Length: 425
Image (cartoon, rainbow, N blue to C red; front, top):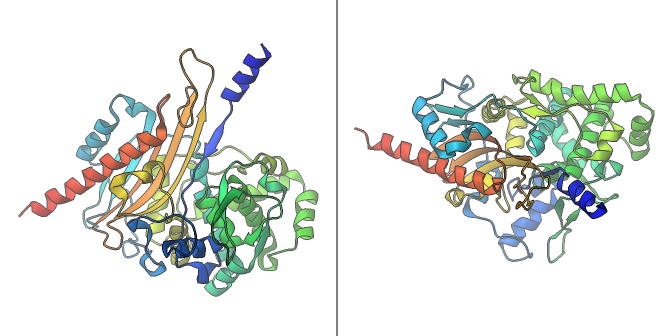
């Protein structure tokens, strides 16, 4: 009986996950993110590390905002033909999806399609894009006319992992100058890197530990303003002595004010709490949720340079640029030559069921998978340019494979549509 009880508890556990390495590989001099230098050297065979697909090799100057000259573009009315094609991809599982797609390949004739665009669920690791927005909004508020000062804070502020990282199973790439190979392990108390690196770990390796450290720094940044960064003793005293209610209010203000201020709807996009259990104990949060339609509007405003300002939007886009192993939606072979700007997250939950074995991404109680992506194909050419948000809860199927399959079908659909247009007299 005890064994059966332990099995039930294990199967009922919740798992949030998401990984996709980001930022252009020539960005080390600007950011001080050591991973970028390690991966750049790996492409030359000087460090043991992964080889990148063609679509992951754009430089800083090639990762830019594609809708900056179209600041008034919003989501047009859904195209019935587009909607029908999306629904056909999903078949009988359509009711378990929320999808929003904006095809900007012909910027004079955008096409929008959606399936349950208002489908609302916990965004999981996709909520980390709200944390990134909070950081860049805080920096702009403190240094409104001084981009070099913002860059200096990101590059020169050193962050040391502490109890906020507890607990997390995600591994991050660790490398120091001169090491022959990139190592992968969980963040540990005492790990020290600049704020840029923690942002990269948060959005690339999707480390919950890194995300909670970034959220900690966000609260300190909003509270201390130009006096940030503060030393470890000041930070510790702040979190120990500030009343719980004030900490909760500061967390909410730091995360959610930027959402509303940047033209997004907090009723459809909210990151309400830390990503680690210890972080949630120290600072009490609230629920998190998103809809595909509002996630897509986040991407549109990013491409327009309207998330805070063009500098901030461009840097968030660079942080989302995939420059390592592609997973889930982004792992589609159809996207190998494409530049993909991507974040994903998953949650699966199981309970005992005759004939069913609980596996990763195949929950029988809950099996959520969320993906947001900007696709430019081929990379550096941008013949195709579309933005997509997918949220799903398809039980007992491998949701990572389901998203990969959907990505392939969507890409071929958009390819075919533009071939059809170009062939018309």
